[in-house]
Length: 350
Image (cartoon, rainbow, N blue to C red):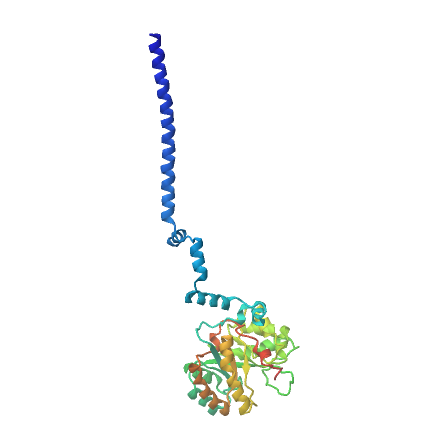
């Protein structure tokens, strides 16, 4: 009986030992299945190109074949593109782009084509000449009227009705003042600010809705930020645009406008009223390449018969050369192009 009992215990012990091994076997099998499912899901979630990379494992033989095979046309194009996009550290153009602000390389007008803003000055005093301009040209041109023009309000209204953007000139003290003397509305440097504000308000009263202000002469007045600030503030308070005549490389207009958070487009190229035919032709020749280089430029041309005829012919060449004609009011930022006054060697003018 005792032997039977011990034999029974021995069988139970062996059974428990076998069950323990089976238990660990189940645990290991469960972990294997769980890990396999995880790897399978991860493989399915990988992008196709990553799977392809794993499949296309290069052996020493395939690497040797790839080394000896000539490059494809696509690889040549990719290499050429990389070489073109890689800046040359010794190139002066690379250094220039690094040094200058981004505004020098981006047009400020929302247009896909380079643009030219054309300003015709000296209108209003000669009715015959003014009528000729109004009938010869159409919109997309800015016309500047003298504050001394007779029936100024009617002339401005007629021009706006025909689609022109209109300006009134605000005379400013030239370096050679009083020769010439731009008249009684001339703003003077080193005087009480109230005098200049009074003259500015007189001009603003003539400028009905839709008419903005452009400086005239000013090679001395525009060099004084102290005298400029109250005048520009007054123009801003009347919600008018001020166009910088850019008559001197020492002008403080852009700095003052920036401090006042004003949009003050700047004239880039000015054709002198005394220019002969050769100078005139050279002037118009450089407009298109300058526009293509800078994105947009502003040009000022006096409205005299010899210039009007040439200007009308030249204007027809803009579309052929991919240039858009815009008004000065369409320029959205004050600093829109390179400093062409220095670039063209412009010196102080009256």
